[in-house]
Length: 233
Length: 166
Image (cartoon, each protein chain N blue to C red):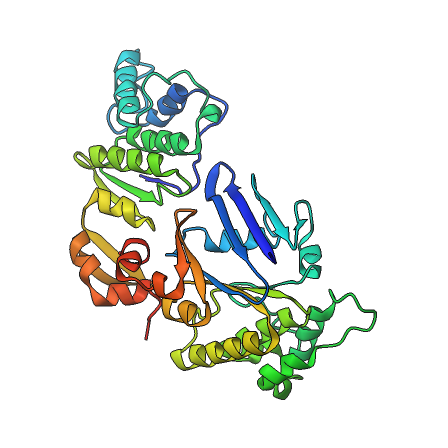
């Protein structure tokens, strides 16, 4: 198993944001987590890269317990993180943003991998431009490119469709599918956009109030009854 | 009166003392009740409140010993002690267990018989239990209003919940 989350709980003070969540992602898999606003999806993702500590439970990356690790150490194990709201560095150029992504590579000479520009040619065209001047969709692509620059085995995407026009979302879906198909990269996607999530992911989990309440393959999660019970009003 | 998403009770004093402090300045009997030796009035009032917020018999426990959910109830109690006409609750069930969430809906239902109550919540199960009028907001404006069942039936509400904003 590439990444294994076992019984993980996360608290903000005494307030429980994630309760005994368990899930797995294997090499090359495409997995999503669905859920309404405020059910703990982002919290779960942040705990998976050690940006917030979990209280109880374990997280393993290829059988290595990441307890006590720093976020950059988790990144070095091959886990790329694309945060909600992109969080690119607006005052640096596109190229500088990507170079920052390479800093966790183990090799002495660190280079932006070719696949970044192969899959996101727009980043090459915009390489000298201030990242803050990019459109929302381009910033999302930059955030993914920056994660890819660390040569990950798995990337965690937190609501990549947020704030993007439908045409841009479709473009993003196409690129992500091609990327996983051609490189064997695993994807773990947290989304509120049901259609995008189930288009990209082969299977997934649904969260409600900090707990996983359903899981299955994409077709099962599309089921009207499940959608009605856990995702809509 | 409003309460906040993260409970802000006085941790180092008892449940009872938290409620007494909150009732100083209460609209019900004003800040001078203690000076006028109307302690019993205040205590009766506070005891009624502990019952409403499912904390009766726990009066002398330190607030810091309460669970996250119980602290939220205590804070609701502190708002009640003030004697408000309108109560605004910001995500009262955030971080609660499913059982605590059900109890919270019972508490709020009881309160709302006497006091107009506005609740902001993500938790759909909770809203279903409360079963009152719902206003759905999206990107800073009102998307829909109606009973819970009406809201649940609206296509535009479904679309927003499934991220199909169009």
